Length: 342
Image 1 (cartoon, rainbow, N blue to C red):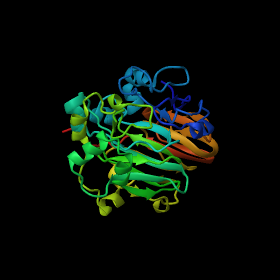
Image 2 (image 1 turned 135 degrees about the vertical axis):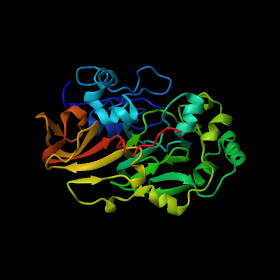
Image 3 (image 1 turned 45 degrees about the vertical axis):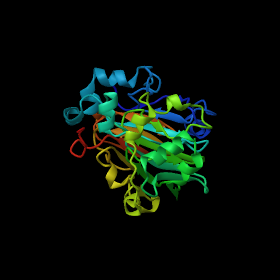
Image 4 (image 1 turned 135 degrees about the horizontal axis):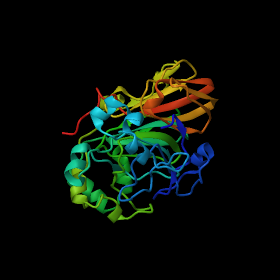
């Protein structure tokens, strides 16, 4: 067992355009169809054996390392609550085109139809956004199922996009996307994404993307897949609870970056230089500014610079940063806060 480790690039091909900003930031191969990098991943792409899994510097799959030494990687409290699963998948997502309107199933749907313990609630932390780009989240008015199905069958992209709330975002904003809510993001948005550890997406449109109807419904058929969709309107008051604007993040050495509603699913903090600020536990760390050193309670020291991604195990103990450096730290939920499948 070693301490915190730098993660090699893990940029993935996908059905939509993007990826050059990931390459510029992380040193991966770039686009045009590599719009995602999976960081600290112990789960593969849906239907794949290993594609998407992260490797450590020596080539070992992180998944296999965690299986071999779960207590060292995750800690006993985490294991008692969740078992040997980090409960987290972190991605970089660089949208070179508008993503299709889509949704993710919740845990009950995933268990009932796919035999999986996790659904896919997710959150975005905006790293870059062009001024005209928008996130699109939740229906503006309650929809009938037959109306949604008609738009899907007609490939009515305009109708689907117009049915959603549109909101401008800028660097530092964070958005929680609960499972079941239809959503998309425009071209020009680059985010760090935290999510439950699955690759479950249901597409409501596919025309103009390198995917077809057969790849849109998780192999369940659209009639079944639409059972995962939340049809009621996302009211403005609820929408406000899902967005944390950058100006509301405190200017402190360690600051929470996500709306409080995200706490049962995952945690994210911005960390700057200081004492041992980050408590022991599995974490995926992305250096966004400067350079410095990660200093762990157990004596480990890891030199870092902008663009580095790191996975830190529980066994390293508490840790902090030294130097002129800023990082985003992504962690599983506190075991006391986490939801249980019902």
